[in-house]
Every structure is written in C-alpha cells, then in structure tokens.
Length: 136
Image 1 (spheres, rainbow, N blue to C red):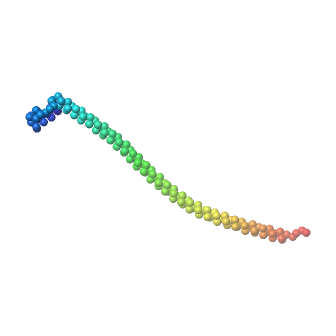
Image 2: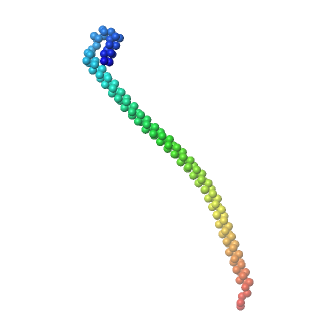
Image 3: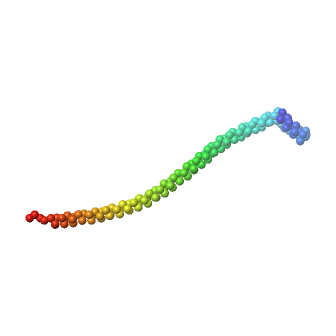
C-alpha cells in the first residue's frame, strides 16, 4: 500500500516516461521495499536497545555520583575530627611539658631539702651526744 503510494508520487513528479528506464520490475521493487522496511525495523530496535543501555549507564553513573558526594562529605567530617584531635594533642603536649618541668623542679628542691634535713638531724645528734655526760 505504501509502496504504491510512493510509486504514484514518483510517477507524478517524474512523469510516466521514466518507467521505461526503470530496470527493476514490480516484484523486485516490492522485495527491495520489504528489505528496507526490515532494515528500518532493525535500526529502530538497535536504537531502542542503545537507549535502554544508556539509561542503565546513566543510573549507574548517578549512583556513583551520589556515592562520591557521600564519600567526600565523610572525608570532610573525618578531616575536621583529625584537626580537632591534632589541636587537642598539641595542647596536651604543651601542658605535659610544663608539668614535667614543675615535677623536675620539685624533685630537685625536695632532694636538696632532704639533704639539709639529714645534715640538721646529724648535727642535732652530734650536739645531743656531746651534751650527754659520759659515765666514766
């Protein structure tokens, strides 16, 4: 039906004189037309399959994009935590150094003071022994 319409339009445009130059007969023309229709149908099917593949690929890429954003957000959060920990460690390190100096100073003073206490006690012991009259 469509083939007849195309043929009649061609005849109207080109005139009936060109039919004598046509080397294909009507049967061959019909077969060619059916092959073209089949080819177009195959092309449509291939395009449909490609579109479906592209849609599936697009969905996968969209999920990967979402995962990338989630990973980026998690990395930012972890970096913030690491910075906070680093600042706290620095503060604790400063305090530990200060307290270590204080402990060293107190240890030095206490050992120095202990030496004076021992000297004082020994001096006291010598005085007491010297003050006690010997019984001979």
